[in-house]
Image (tube, rainbow over the protein chains, first blue to last red):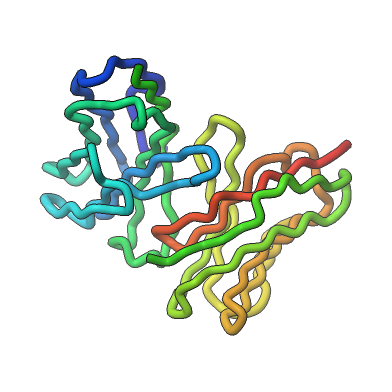
Length: 115
Length: 105
């Protein structure tokens, strides 16, 4: 089954404790992206990657890091999480290299709470 | 950045009626437009996409695009309670904040 897999689904952590949210897709997509979703603000892009070893900032990159060492994986790293990073996070992938011609396939989401 | 705006609702529609959802976008050069459905606590699911001016129909769903007015809409005919969700308009990589739709039995 074609899918984007995120882990974990739920995560509660403390301020300052480094964490990684994993994302993997099995569709051989070149384009992958991370979004956060907050009430009233909608989906906002954090980082994206058009190919292996190519990443770029989205609208809200502060406090986040990403890497793309393999085509299928695109982990999101919070080196020192803060409470304002409490949010619902989605990983997404697309076959169109980011031109926006095709839609995204989204992962199931990760609900992160930072206390 | 391509800004996308939607009326946040909530929009309440009786079962069996037509639900009409609207979206405007700022980038006149945009070419591809998407509608996603998102149930509470779930991930967005692609339900329609449209590239050309006019209407595109898929079952009970019709997407309408007017590039001159920078306007996209989604019509849901014969609305069902299972259509109750938040509908997101997207001009990739930007998303509107969504319109919450409730179908009243």
